[in-house]
Length: 144
Image 1 (cartoon, rainbow, N blue to C red):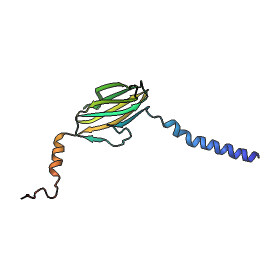
Image 2 (image 1 turned 180 degrees about the vertical axis):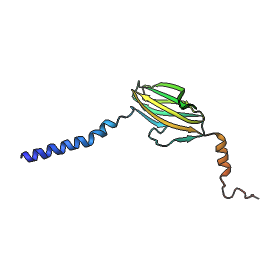
Image 3 (image 1 turned 60 degrees about the vertical axis):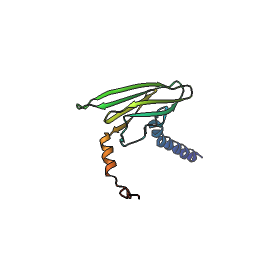
Image 4 (image 1 turned 135 degrees about the horizontal axis):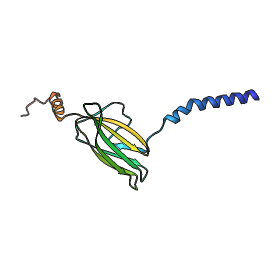
């Protein structure tokens, strides 16, 4: 019976050590973004738009701070825009964030937790060049 208890205690201790780092490292923001930003993205997101509209959900009364920054030529972050949103009684919010050309570092802070995502704004000339490069079959056919 003592050997059974020792095995059971050993298994429980092993399970505790195996799963404890997961629960410690799993701190997430109390905010859910439904569209506009992908906070789980590991790659830089590219866009041609001059602004990004972000929609999300959180507990009513939660203050969410959005900061748009760029890195200057000296390697220092320069804050371009800051917007604080207080979530309404329905638990929904939206915010419009301006984007400059190049990499925009967007920080979202709520209840002391911060997440960052990078959105790269590409010039419209690149979009125009890409559209010209795409050849669609049948475009040169003249209809009679």
